[in-house]
Structures are given as C-alpha cells and as structure tokens.
Length: 385
Image 1 (spheres, one colour):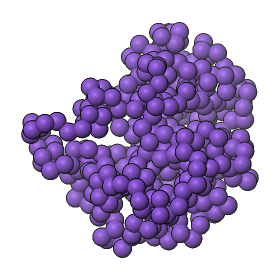
Image 2 (image 1 turned 45 degrees about the horizontal axis):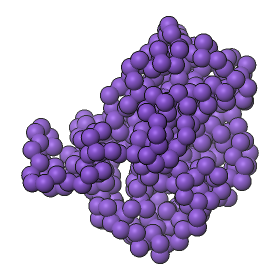
Image 3 (image 1 turned 180 degrees about the horizontal axis):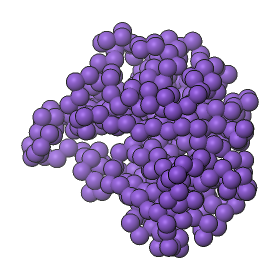
C-alpha cells in the first residue's frame, strides 16, 4: 500500500529563553497552533510521531486517543527529520491518515541532560569519568557538539578546501539579512562581517555566531493524505520525496572523514526518489546547527560542487533575491534552535506564499534538511499541482 503525503498544518509554541512552561505545555501550544492553521480538530488526528523530550503520554494529555499509530524516539539531538520521516511513512503505508510530527526543545538547564549540564553550568571540577567510545573524546574536550560537530568539521573543511573565516562571516551576514525580513526572528538587527569576526570562539574555529541559538520552543507539523489536505483551511503542500540515512559509526567524533558523512548518502537517496533536480528548487531550508553544516548540505544536494559553498554564498545565490534563497526565516542562528523543525515549517509557508517581505516569488519547490554526521534527513516539498 502506498499513499501520497501532504502537509496540512504547521505551528509553533511561544518561543523564548527560560519560559515558564513545561515541555508538555509547549507541545500543547504548538499542536493547537498547527490544528488552527489546518482548520482541524484534535479528533481528526490518528497518529503521533515524537522525539526528544515529548512525553510518552502526549496522546492522553492532548485528548487524542485512541490512536491508530504512535512513534517515539529517545534521540536527543537534531532529530525533527526522524520524527517527520516516520510520520510521512505512516501516512504512505496507511498506518494512519493524519499524523502529528512533534519536537520540543528547551534552553539547556543544569541537570536536564548530560550535555545541557555542561553547557549550562560549565565543566565539572576535576576529571570526568566516561566509558565506551567517549573515553576517546571527552578527556580531550571532544564531547560537546560545538567541538565534535562544529569545530572538527569546520577545521577539516577549511584545511581541505581553503575556506576562511571571512567565508563563514559572509554566510552569517546573509542569514541575518533573511532574519531582518522575518517578524518572528529573535535576532533581526543588521549584522556585518566585523561583528561576526569579533564574536568569541566557542570551539575554534567555530564562533558564537556560527551556532544555533538555544531557546524554549515546540514545533508541530500535520501530515496527511493530499485528499484530506485539500479539505483543510490552507493550500495543500505535497511531499515529493524524503530520505533518512545513517553511517556505520553513530559516534560522529570518530568518523574518518568529516567532509563525507550521512549528508551525502541522504542527498543521493533523496534525488533518486524524484524526477526533480537541484535546478528545479526555488528555496531551501538547510540545517544550521553550526554554519559548516549548511555548507555541507549545499554541496551534497548538488547546488554547488564540493568545496564551492563559500563562492556560491559569496556570489549571492543564497541571499534574498538569489537563485536559491536559503534559510529564509533566518535559520536557527536567528529564530532559535528547533532541531530542524523550522526548516520544514518555513518551507511550507514559502510554498503557500505566506512569508510577506521575505517571500520567494513564485516558489513551487522547496527542499529542507536536518542533521549531519552520523545521521541525516531531508525532504522535497512542492505546491499542489
């Protein structure tokens, strides 16, 4: 059994720093926003896909029971693609007809999570005892994402392809130029290269302005069949293809080559499942937990060659009015860390023509992506045609 898949509704919770809401309260806000966006009721939902902090009892909390399908994962990191792909698969297989894909994340608080405890409270006094694969990374400062995802990848890329900090500064400036057109962005003041280069190092060469911005936020996307989506309040957005890939070593810090990871395999799989080509894409939402990841996605998806992302960005392709406006909401560096959900939601809004000053004229095809290294996911969305 194979059904086509569409997006019927999208929504965010209130977003900010240290908000007085629990994870479940944030999720409830996001679900309510997505249902209102689609013109649906809670009883119209018969599937839920969750990960990273969403309660196992969310169906009961939302009053959405019984369910025909439910999925949850303990994956903590940039995992909205996993949640979305599982929901898409459930619709395509007929396991359910209308599924919520949910992601909630909070600004790190000490005690929430091993990584959060370090980032919120600083390193522990004395040596840290670890086992397994982390014994080869943690003693050397390689256990934090800014080091083993951002720093190591960025160093390898700069060494292999000759990229400079000025190249990453240009990318940050372009992302901010999009954010300046987004009333929902948390950072919308003009940014120049000197300000980027003056921001502190987090894990050299990664600077503070290369990093996504920790916030409290929940996101919800409603997937359903095209037939049902066409009965909803907003224009249906069709899912043309999707892909999810993983590489052999799930510990990214131990990858042999940081410039060749799950992003490449995911991109190849994505294009193998569609008749569309990179030249057909009107706008892109490419994961930017750290700036280097957006560079990787631009190249792996075929928008430019390996090592050519800096020139592609410098030539204006990713900015407002470019051939491939990228991260038109401003990216997670400017709208807040949502672990990939914002790229899906912004793509949907672009294809509906809802983005106001930042709207890409005539946008009909969008690609969005999530994650890097050990695992990666991506999807192509189109207008209903």
